[in-house]
Image 1: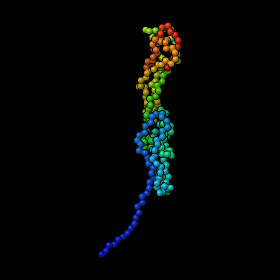
Image 2: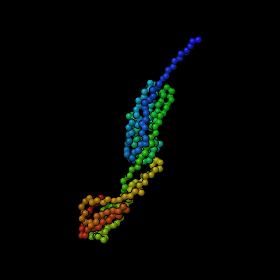
Image 3: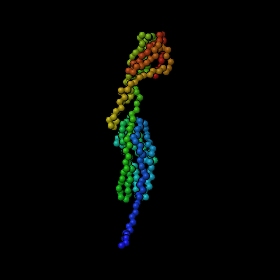
Image 4: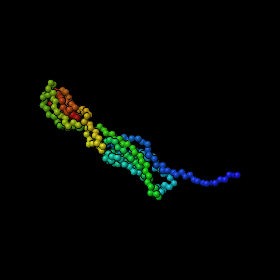
Length: 220
């Protein structure tokens, strides 16, 4: 009779992990040509609580699947912020990947924890452009009511630059946009006109002179 017992002991060891974590930010959107961007708190903390942390080295690796979008490639600064600078006249979608690299010095084993964030670079509406002469010469009373001046004036009218295809062959084509001209008197001479100058969307300058008037009118 009786009860026999065998006693054995064991240890449960809870190994502390690195507290370095990534943000849960979704897609990042920035405007074309908007300069340097710093995304604060992309890395929550760089604290390492492991008891053997002296036997580990950690670092960050960053990459982008379309480097041509950037003047400054993505990187992680000492404060854990993601920073990058997009290139001029570049827009479209790309992915930024950040990996936490953990090297165990004793074993030589490297582990990686990766985070990929989509980046959407939005195109902006560019300034239009055109060419025009600096002066127009007419004779007094040459273009009175019933015989107003109308002639081509503005040329090479472009709603905005059609940029070169981006790294993924995307093209921001502004040729379908409409333009209009606003003509404003900026210096004297308004009285020489019976109808002030206007410029049509296709660049035609129109005005009617006042009878027996001469002088100069400056417009922008």
